Length: 375
Ligand code: OSB
Ligand code: MG
Image 1 (cartoon, rainbow, N blue to C red):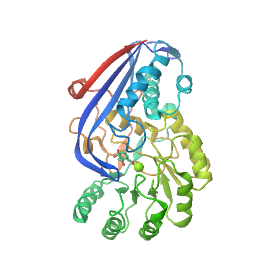
Image 2: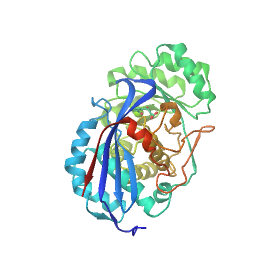
Image 3: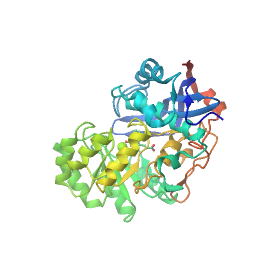
Image 4: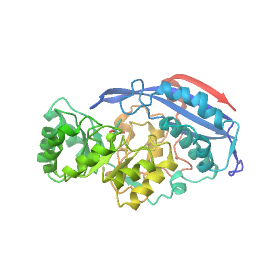
């Protein structure tokens, strides 16, 4: 065993994978039928730490980062800053990346892989190092825009029957109040939310005033990804809590969002905010404001899904997250362990680190490009 207080990063295995989704996922910004994702493995004294990136494949439609842009930053700035160096904890590791501005999804890959490596070196689950308090996490499901209302009611029925604890509907102008009204009529009592992925402006406030009638838990990211000010204006005009996703890039932004009443609920995606340390800070800021948080998803493979699960064990993750069963998304996931929801609860993997291991046969089969970089 290496000295866990001194992890020398010897090499990085950086790949790009292409994985077909079982379903077409339509949001206000586009239709996705596969994921193209970077996968990073950090090596130290025979141990590994693994993470995936959640940036857009080619077009920056969710936020600004893309896979090729991230690879550039990872290869030319982030990995050179850490490879060959020795780190004794995630704070020290994150401090090394701190001078680099933005590129939070790229940075998150390195930071998350380091946490996994560190937890494995200490032989404990990632959740215990993060301060987790649960061994199962409550989860809901995020359902894409459907062809028509019968198709929507059918897919909602299927997931309600599977026991998911909350149903989230993707909305866009023209697929909003009618869709919500139909689902609420069929299911008067389910926990229901909507996610607009920034598709509206304040000029469409009437849509959200109409949605107030349907007892939604919250409305996720109705307005522009970088506009807290208009979210605060909208929040003042409606009863339903707003939840921010795209807008929440750091604990500092979270403080401003909650102070200015731009939202009352926070969606945390560890892959979006630069890693577990920042995710935990966001969790803590929200808790101090009395605002619940939940863990969002980016259609992750089992690798990112496992990181999300460990993150979700922290105490203020009181609302169901989007980390639904791996088998919903993938015919062959890239990890060996199943990550399956039972009665709306996802078990937290109990092994060291994320508790999941790559299924290298599948990884090799779906690898588009791969490179080993040494310190
Ligand atoms: O806004 O939460 C989002 C997927 C891709 C990009 C953005 C979002 C989503 C989802 C799916 O809602 C969540 C999941 O099932 O992983
Ligand atoms: Mg969202």
